Length: 102
Image 1 (cartoon, rainbow, N blue to C red):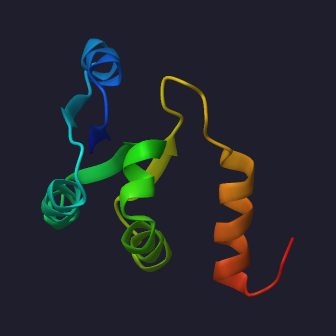
Image 2 (image 1 turned 90 degrees about the horizontal axis):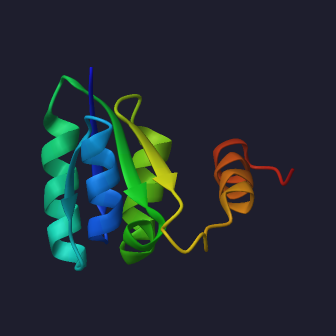
């Protein structure tokens, strides 16, 4: 099983590399979606980590992938400024998936 990170900054990329996780840095929607499609087609890919800023570039596509795909697992990680509100994000995914507000 492979783990890969799509980041918006070099700091996160370096941290992932130190942990042995391959990573790329992108700043535009088209590049992110192209790489994401490539990673999803890889049968050995298990987890795709994405920084909050990257997720915010294409939230509609990423939400759809999270709801439809069994594998790989797409996980949003906070950016270096800690601006993510992961709890609310998880609540919204659950609400979308089961159709009721928690």
